[in-house]
Each structure stands twice: as structure tokens, then as C-alpha cells.
Length: 565
Image 1 (tube, one colour):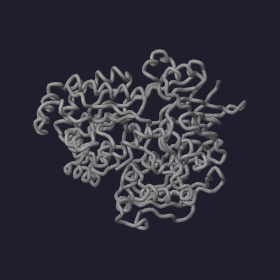
Image 2 (image 1 turned 90 degrees about the vertical axis):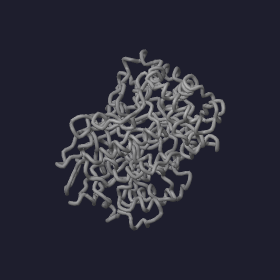
Image 3 (image 1 turned 60 degrees about the vertical axis):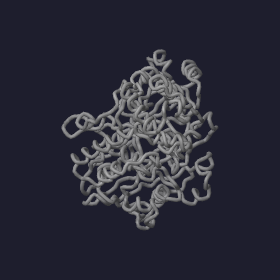
Image 4 (image 1 turned 30 degrees about the horizontal axis):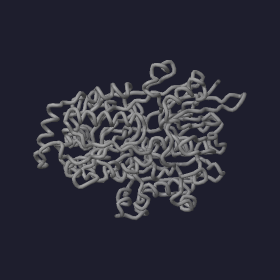
């Protein structure tokens, strides 16, 4: 399984389709060196003004946690992108060598040997191969409880170690010396380098992490910095200031802005006014009501950023709720009663109604997209009220209930933003209008609390977005029982068996067919219900260049950001 990532175009995948033995390197003098077999690099075009240091202030989401081992939020990832370095970095030019200067791949495609460049932490201490190995140990340790452990299951014995059935010494991670890290895979895979570039594999210093304990990542002093910036101010739920790190290995040739300030402004009217008054240089997300007013400043990224899902917990928050939600016909009734087209048009304007789990940007085998070549039966985007009513009548009969008035109270949990409130209230209203269900209650919490409810299964229904995966089957791997995003809320042995077969299948046509079958089972189960494809509308002042979404979970990129006021 892989950590769910942000959007990727098929062309980027080609960067990592490297078979056989080879060495790949980058130019030390380039800030973002495109990964190629010849060692060619793409030169960074950004340059810092000679007059005074550039600063950049924008409004956007704040991190839930800066503990990289426990992080799940894309807002966390935006901060890690600035504060930490990896073996590789993903930016607007694709996969770039970062702390890894070059690497070798064995002829059988199983063993990767990474040669690290000389690079330092912000306190001047050297970054070593041992620190990357320790990070992998943290991600995979069952005691650490990382929600992203399965990201690294391609590594030999990684899953067994995470499950407690193998020792760390048996995992395919070896430190050959301070500058050389060796990773051995269980099976060859085309996207391992891409996974490393987008998975959050950063170095960690064991002594520091152990000294911080549970406070690791909770404040400026409980973090260490290997990336282009350090954290110099952090006021919870207010502002974060990132200041350029002179110890970053490529500080002189990259990330030209000296200071980046991230503000948290919940009120969309206030955010709009601050942008109009020139108090901020960008808005990471423009409210629907201001799309027309800010049309000259807006960029809309559409198509493959991920999906908004409705999650249904079969166990429920009460015994009665669990009995109802474990009934497949009841779940199908909720699914078919939803009008995705009307809802999206009413609340987001920029997002795309969608009812499949596999996004449309993946390539098929015959020149079309995967979704064209491997169709499935999914709910009509406008819903089907008659069919929803049939499913509900069957469910009530199976449950021994005479009417919807006898249904138990169900808790629909989400976080406390206006957009989420509107989305969830619209769903609840459709279930009321179309099915007569009045027992669904909306519970909104601060985002940290809401995510905590989600990870601990303290909900009946939950609406949350997940960014897209590297391949069509990656997303499906997360939903097996016990997977990264299915902690027992749904179980299907046939589905789990298909996903296991997909993981070991080497014939691509067969792999696609199995993916199609698994997706159909998951859709028929209606426990994880896709609702719309994610898009982002962001606004930048005319004097800002180089601010935009990079895809693949990198969030907003700052590698070539310039601010010429």
C-alpha cells in the first residue's frame, strides 16, 4: 500500500520507469535538477532581488501536527516541504535529487544504493545515511503507530516488521557508511523513487526524537530543520513564519524568498479584504463567493487532486447505529439518494461530481484512460431516488423496522469550516427530502479533534478528502481491512484477496483487470463513497510569480517563488 498522494500526470511517472542497472545523478549547482539517466539537469530560473530580501505572506491551512511520523494532513505536508529535506524532492520539474546526490540500481531491480551529498542540519550537524534509516524504522515500528507505515511496504520485510513478525535487522535497510544508504525491495517496482520523493521520507536524529518524546513536532524547539527554511515563529491557529536556512545544501541557488508567513484566517470575507488591501500576497484557497470578484488573480487546478469521500463506519458509535450501518442496502440507499451534480454546483463551483474511486487521469493500455478502458457500474451523478427508496425499503425489512422513524440517531462528523458544514448539511437535507430520514445529526469539531475522531472510528458518517495515488491500484490498497484508511470500518474477504493479488501481479493487463474488479466490489459495498473530484482555486497578486500547486502531495511549491512588489 502507498500513502495517498496528490495529483500526478502520466508523464511524470516516466521519470521513474527505470529498469536494470544504472546510475542517476544531478548537478550540484542547480536548485532543482531533473532526474535523468544522463545526469542532465533543469536550471532554476528563480533569482532573489539584489535590493532587499523578498518576503511572502499568504493565507492558508495550518498544520495539524509537525510530527512527521504521525502526520496525515496535507497542510502538514506544506510545512514539511519547507522545513525538511528528503533523498529526493518533488517540484514543478518533477522528481529532483536532493540529499541523494546519485544512486545505483541492481540488475534485478531490487537493491537501491543511495549516495548522499554533503549536507547539514540548520545547526551545522551533518545529515547522514543513518538518520534516513532511523526515519524508516520510525515509520515502520509498530510501537510508533505511524498511519503511513504501509507507504514503505515495498521494502523487504517492512510489512512483517510493522506487524511485529520480524526484527528490524531483517528489514531491507542498511547503512553502508555515513554517506551511503542501501534499500532492498521485496519485488521490483517502477515507482519506488517517486514514492521516496513524495512520501515524506526525511532524516531524523534518534537522540533528539527520543529526547522530545510525545512533544516531538509540537513547537519550534521540538523540531530540527534539514530543509530550505527554519521555523522562527509559530502562534497556534494564527500565524507561522518560515525563515531561509543558510545551512540548506543549495541555499544560494534555490528558494529565493527570505521569509514566508502563513496566516490562518477562517472568515472568507476577512481573507478577501486582506487580499484586496494588499495585506497578503496570495490566498491558498478562494471562497466560492469571491471567485468572480478575484477572477483576474485566480488559478484553478482541476482534474486529479483527489476525491472527497463520504465514509460510513459499519461498527457505528452505538450498537443500534452499527446494526443499521452494517446493512449494505441501507448504505446503498444513502449513496443513491445523493445528487452529486446539484450539490457540487451549489457549494463548490470548481469541483467535479464523481462517483468512481479511480480518478480519470490514469492511462489505460490502449491509448485511452483507465476509467474509459475499464468501466465499472457506479451511482449516477444525479442520483437515483427510486432505486434509493427500493434499497431503503429492503434495508428496513432486513432490520425489522417498520419505518424510518425507528432509525437510531446517526452522527455525521466533520471539521468546523463553512464549506464542510454546507456540504454535510446538503447531504443530510437530501436524505431527509428523498428518503424521509431525519435522525442524522451533524457534529462539527476543530480539525484536529475531527481527524482524531476519524482515526479512532468515533463517527457514524464522516466527510473527508484524500489526495490521489500514484497508480489506480494504490488507492484501493488503502481500503483493505486494516489498511491505512480502513481501521475496521468495512471488511470484504474477496476484496482483500484481490488487492493482495494485485500487489504481486506482474502482468500489467491482468493487474488492470484485477483493479477493475476490486473497485467494483468497493463501490458495491458503498462504505467508502466518492462524492466529487477535488480542485483548488488560489489567488496571487500580480507581482508574485512561481506560486502554485505542484501535485503529488507536495502542496504549494516555493522553489522558484519570487515577489517583486
